[in-house]
Image (cartoon, rainbow, N blue to C red; front, side, top):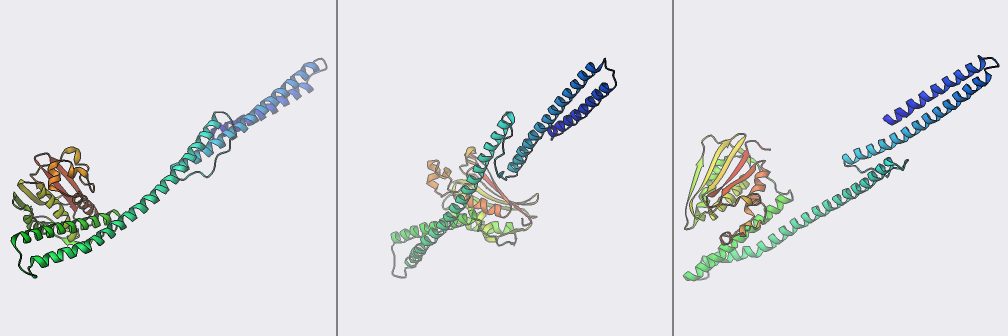
Length: 362
């Protein structure tokens, strides 16, 4: 607005000066005798010419200042609209062809690019949401369709193992146990895929109640002991005496501890897997500490990503298997509870996974 005010001041000053010069010239014309008439006429002419020139220059300055200020105001309004994520509605008319005109043209080009970016972003967002919905529906449909015949396979395997249709020899029993083990693994995998799909599409809901983290961990530890097989791995449970209850879904909390605990046992051949529960500031900490093969530092940031290829990065890890879903699901479930899951590890020294759950529901 400063150019407009400056032009207005100049125009006012010019008008006042013009009137003053005119009055001075007329006074000089009527206040002299015949001998000084020629000089007075010259003074009057000079005064009127100067007054007219100054008035015209001042008026021109006021018009220029007004146009300049209006252009700047429109550019400023357009920039503010862009900052507020609102695209300006139209191009700005050019009043000048100088540097200001170049600025207005550059701004209009920026505005059009901004509008294109907003439109492209909205379109990509819609496409991404549609693709995510289709992916979730596809995963659920495929998982349900595959689990139907798989349940039949498991059922008939149980029938054969029960020797309802006749006795079996040792080799046949061993084969059936392998079939049943593989089938149970596939069922667990399908359940993981469904959980991951539900979490990604915000369809996973928690049934919150007051639960004791120590009791949950003790129950899971009793189940995990059977996963050690013939490995010389001790499973140790440590629960502090002052651990408070938390608002959590018991089923999902068991799933979190089971995923982390079974993962620790899978990658530990000797030593121990320690499940610890203790109080921390504002919540409860569940730690799963193992003495296994460890995780490289550069892989810690991506081990919580679904289908992470780190599980197949070495022959040792390929031998132990895994689809790379357990940690991703555990992290999603912990965050649904308003908590956080972190990992620390050293190659050859073991890993520590820490679950922090708030004492109050968030």
